[in-house]
Length: 338
Image (tube, one colour):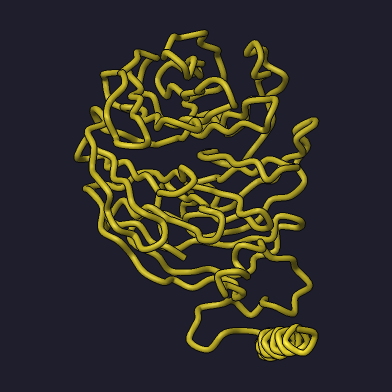
């Protein structure tokens, strides 16, 4: 018995040595042959999401494939197993399996669905035309659970752990909806033409495109805690666990704000007409609708780590599934997986 155990232990050591040897070789090379990784790769001193390593995804990024969805792909959200993409021109949302991009269903979502959010059980979709509603779909099968009035031209949605927040472009406001039953809990004034919205765990942040600023509201009661300057045509917004990031469509850059007081910590150039934005645990990814690309920035200091081609007009949807980045391409009716 002792001999068998030692033999098995020796086999594990050999296998581990092979794996470590491969990783060491790749670290020395800096990139994986055939990938589209940026020059800032394994030896840059950055940490990586462990899920990426487990999937042998140690390189910076690689456009693995693009999947067809509906007409006018205009957002993206991850539900823990699948990616949801609203199709603005079809009035539908498409559900894709993250492992291989298989379409699991296409479901009615109302008029001109412009975004999508997941609340842990259900999918929420704002209908951005005159209907002024947000649709609630069951994530397991796509069935419609309700359509709830919120206000004029709803744009983007975010979940705060209990309620759904919806920006209202024409009302210069954000609506709070109870996730359990769709009841409207309040409507709160923000800046001019609000688009992007994000939650930092305690507060709601809204990007105001018309007034080039960001509004911070307390999630518990909607009280305004501050209004902070961003760039030209502030569009979308994301939280990186420490700070707030805002895409500025009119100035082709992103602004990083300190969460506690809204102080500008930096402004960083990206591609043309930046729109959607997401955080992957280490880096920030920005969709550049005017250049058909996504830019990857290191969250700690805003350094650009690479720019990668995707489809046409990736204006809204950028999402992270724990290992890969998904980008909705409005102009090519597709979603790209990196």
